[in-house]
Image (tube, rainbow, N blue to C red; front, side):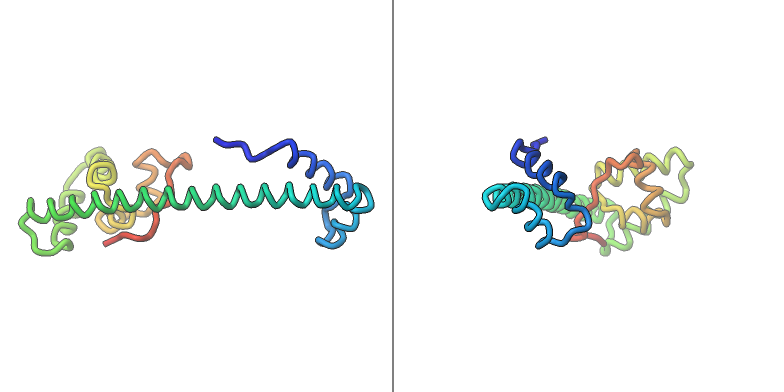
Length: 162
C-alpha cells in the first residue's frame, strides 16, 4: 500500500496543531498560520494539505475503477454461465432457471445449501441479489455463508443483476 503521509504533510499537520485549528474556519486558520509561520509557511502548509487531498482523491478514483472493472469481468462470466444454464436446463427464460435453482436449494440439507451458495457465487459469478432472490435469504446471510462476514467482502457495482 502506498503511503501518502510525507514529511511535508507531517510538518503541515504539526503547524496546524500548533495554531490550534480545531473549531476555526478556513480564514481563521490561515490567519493563525500567517501569524505563527508567515506567508511562505502558510502556503507550504496549504499546498501540503492540498497535495495530500489530491492523492487521496486519486486513490479513491483508482479503487472505484478497480471495483468497476472487477464487476464488469464478473458480469461477462455471469452472462456466459446464464446462457449455459439455460441450455443445460432447456429453459427459454432465465426466470425458469432461477425457479429450478430455487427448487434445488429448497430440497437440500443445510450443508448442501451452503455449498450451493458458494458454488453460485464463486463458479457461476452470481451477484448477491440473484442469490438472495433464489434463496429468499438476506445479504448478510449470504456473506456469512461465503465467509466474508469479517468485512472482507467488496461492495459490488450495481451494474448487473437479474
